[in-house]
Length: 457
Ligand code: ARG
Image 1 (cartoon, helix red, strand yellow):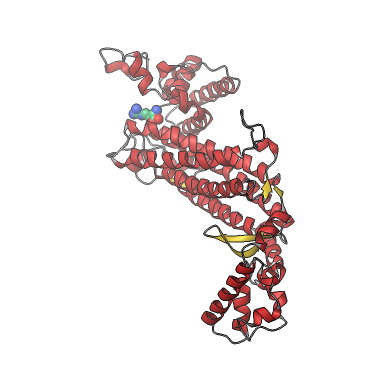
Image 2 (cartoon, rainbow, N blue to C red):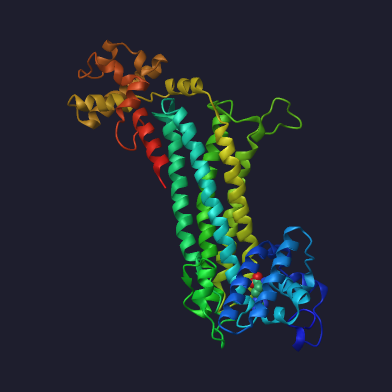
């Protein structure tokens, strides 16, 4: 075998710079386990189809077991000269077992090999992300359960709108994570197809059995078209899109955590292990982890754009451009995995300051809609009720008090429909309990929603 596997037809070697420029071994070696797995399935198929001998297969299995051990123990000598993970492993295999190693690549190309490796790798990453999303949801649900009755202001336009419970607010993020899980599962279905057999682009002249390899590797089916099989990276883009949405959700939550932790708001405190101090201001405790998550969301969007742009100009079939698919993909998976791990732990340690939440509710006339609804139930058209309550709010504002602090007489000045049963309507507890339907913030409904969420598969 010539120096770097394919250089037989070349008159001069590539320069060191070009070698480094074209190599991928320093980032694609993380697919080593998947590469070996794919090679073993391919070799077993070749032996079964009598394309290689049983003793070749035995040698390949023995050699690969040794290589897997070397990689695991950190003893494998990765070499730039061998360009990528595939050639590094093949070269070592041949050094260990001789000719049988050189027969492994029969009926295969690095083009279908790399497409298979990425799919195997991403399938594992998605399974890990699915588990982590469940853990994250479980942490949110635990906190929501503790605060199914804790009132806080719900906001629109960042202005106090209506009372909600903190538990209800957290359940919104549980729903987002649920959709993220569904999207990941959906992406996984399209990942789970076997490219091997496509060879370089047109298929192979050997009597291969693609269905056997697909079964060996746990793929649901084979990729139907050989040209598409080696050049399709839709699944990587879809994953990055689903990951971007996931991170967007985490980023929105981060924004709220940062805001809530500001002393101006003071709704929560984060455990010290998720915060850092300032090198100059001794009093500072900064919410670094949510801030970084908000920042890292940008890089996952960037990775999505990188992959979309990578693919837009590529004619069929494989082009070397595709080698650039791995770093954005790995980076996205790493970012999502680290972020979910850390958020699960951070959510469990959120300290809720219920008194500050209750105090904020006193300041924004949060039960004004309840008063309007009350008037409607007494027979006033909603628009008239809205107007009456708006005038009541203005009066309370002038007096510097809450709606509930106005006397019954004062309130009746805005509408004769107001009776002495209005008191309960103006309380936060009354407002919460009245939103008593599926998806509403009544504490009983929040508890039921938590129970249902825990039942979901
Ligand atoms: N390292 C390459 C990649 O990541 C493997 C496939 C190379 N194929 C080729 N014909 N040069 O895409």
